[in-house]
Length: 638
Image 1 (cartoon, one colour):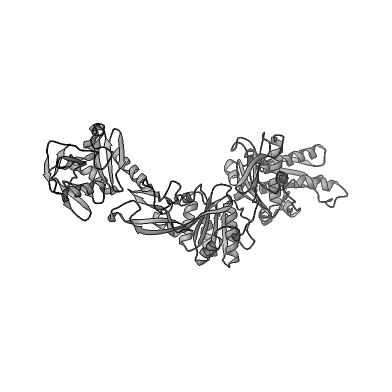
Image 2 (cartoon, rainbow, N blue to C red):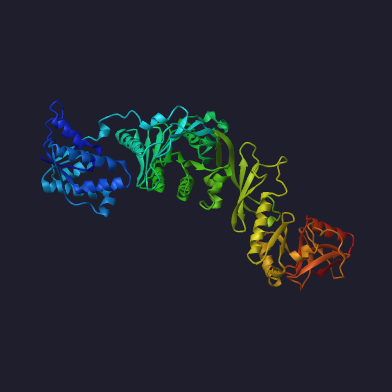
């Protein structure tokens, strides 16, 4: 009798197992016809196993080991082994999941009129439909229970992850959340054979147990979820050596275990929310997400998860979804038909992830996303450029920052139309995203568009916290941003060195080389006026030679008395917002402004033929004081 095994039973080692059992008179399998049979091995099976082994997959090595056992059985006369048929081409191997290799195996069985032996249900049904004799063997997963993994010996009660690599002693992360230590858990370096055995045990256990599934299987990398363990198996050439990393949660928490538990509960049940749970790797983000998921499910919400890989430890009433057809967007489309109240998205990393998160949130689904970030504000900043700025508060209204397993910070995110903090002009009002501390309700950051760029401005010290008096220091975040933007604009039209000095929230002095001043100001002052209008800042352009000569100084009034040789007398006009000095015919010129020959300041005449000084500034106060005292105001070309 001739039998044709397909790839599935060769990988499982079922053929040699049945041959030996059939050859044993005391075996219950005796008489099945495997002993003494001719085993016809299709070259398609050999080609598929060789390709898998070249990709570093353990299934390929296991299948090749089975073929060697069959050759040994042929050598001792128990069976005859023949290799027939043609090898699959590269396209057929790539499309093995579509049935191309299985079709070649069926062709061999049909040509030889042999019995096809398989543990693949689909292969068996297709073969029967074609009139072939078929023997369907139960996969090993239906034959035995799996007690555990060999690598579990590297875990104790406080071990979060084990890190095994060829040529390196076994390492593990142990301790409590926020106090993990990377330490050796063995004395001898691991060999490649040991790593190969560990990998084979993991993959076999995953296939054999209903508690395991393969999340990713690519050349060089396999990721599996086996019970509470998430295991990544890396192989050359993807990695420089064979490596196994196994991670498991070491604690399971409830929402009541965290600070702000009552407030967060009320916030989550008030209405569907958009929440980002942020923190550094290992901070306890996923543990907190699990607690949120369990609370929402207990509060009678329909809760689902989107994970790749699926490793959240949640109850059976919470269905865990992964990529559908290689895309989380497909998963989201399917979930919208399932109509969850809340979806836990673990982890949100790539642009596609943020777009899917935003689409589901805007569709009305409550979303809780897990994001890697070293500061709470960084989680929001990762949305910038991926989600339209004005939609961010609708997508995410709450940010929870986890550190050392505890809730360290909670932000409330809202939009308000206002003049950004630190700017003065009312016509600079715009939509501003306010990021408030959830506990104190004090704004800590503003996010808005400034000079066509999105900026995140802290409203306090460098760590983002407000000052003791509720305000920021003199060198506030908006001052730093404004200084950078002024410098960037001037550098775009100046060839030499540029320095910027802020003189209040709406005025800056720019120092340039002598040869650059005319280019910076532009014909009739047009270029500098355009920059001023874009930034909402009055800019006084001066030269380094002027500064080095002691003229102008660093104070608003120029530092001391300066007596000139006379100049054009002018009559300043005081409006509600500015002190205006008319200088028709002098657009683009740099002039000194004096009162009774006492130097006040240096300025550039705008293209409209005037100098505007914002009221409230130190310069405006000196100018108004001179006007009130009846002093003669003159201007002299500098």
